Image (cartoon, rainbow, N blue to C red; front, top):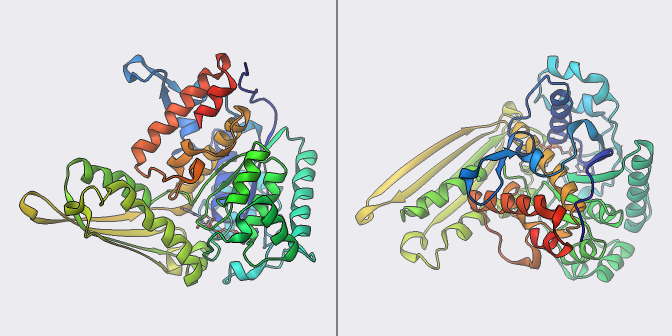
Length: 434
Ligand SMILES: NC(=O)c1ccc[n+]([C@@H]2O[C@H](COP(=O)([O-])OP(=O)(O)OC[C@H]3O[C@@H](n4cnc5c(N)ncnc54)[C@H](O)[C@@H]3O)[C@@H](O)[C@H]2O)c1
């Protein structure tokens, strides 16, 4: 019989990549724990959960149902290719207003990035200088592992979690190098080009048994060798690409069309954004990684093979344009051509005026707290129940993920209920929670 391990003690939250999303998350948590702002959008902070399958039996705040670390227990650290501390980086990102940042200035100033692992070929639009020197990729893994251990000791942390908030890297497919722990270790030793910066961070975190989530679309922790290592060392992982705006709406709307058996002929999605992420995505190879995660969602939800007359001819396109004047205030348009009774055509137009990092920050916080919970529940490998947060969810066994937002929410709630019962449960139940 195992109980959920206690949530007490300090939890270190590590960010490979301390740009707009990471610093908006940190500043928001600091403001929220002083009671100076509300953690809107966070399931762990504002969500409720019914205790049984039957919602009429009442609900409780999520954090009263399962033991989660509180905001006061969090410590922050990370790496970046630029030297700016979290305050300077947040100022540069221009997401949170100056007057609000000033209130937590000293705490933000104290979060200084460690030197990054940066082979520039994977993010071609950035030219960072705050980078580690080393003769091999193996050495880079070891340097990151040393950083992780020092951070944990220096901050007196009991546990750590990491959320990749670094730039989107160029599109890479898993190769023979990624096939097993053995082949990946050989690839690191030989300095294989198949191994990107993000993968080096993921590998170091796994080696240190730090639960890891990938917020970007690139190949990072979703390849066989990493999953083998995650299982071998009993580390939970999740990814990939935060589902924050256009895709979040898409995966809520598409199930509605399907539920009503309305047909779809065209779904054209375009975005403008002007932050550093937008500049990176202006490189066609980085955009390719993003395009792959954005495009995949509709087909799985609509099942055109089962409904060829409704969805068999759907044309789905996604575009992102870098437009500097917009900064983080992304605008996304969707033009949806659908049809109904007797095939009569109709249209829906969406103009989504979001703020990229404001939408992503609560997801980062939830992922950190829920991955820590997963580790304390003895779960390891890909956490399907965290699909809710991702455009292209990782699934145990490599199966096809469910992209329907409401199915994903149900999976998450079911897993939380199972974990809530873990006190009286067995290790077997804990694994079933995944
Ligand atoms: N904001 C959203 O809504 C959203 C949604 C989905 C995915 N994402 C993804 O989240 C990630 C972060 O987005 P952002 O808006 O914060 O971008 P950003 O450009 O503001 O921050 C990324 C940071 O990563 C750093 N970086 C790049 N390579 C690095 C390396 N090897 N080591 C350490 N640091 C490195 C950059 O210097 C930069 O500071 C991107 O991959 C983005 O695609 C964001």
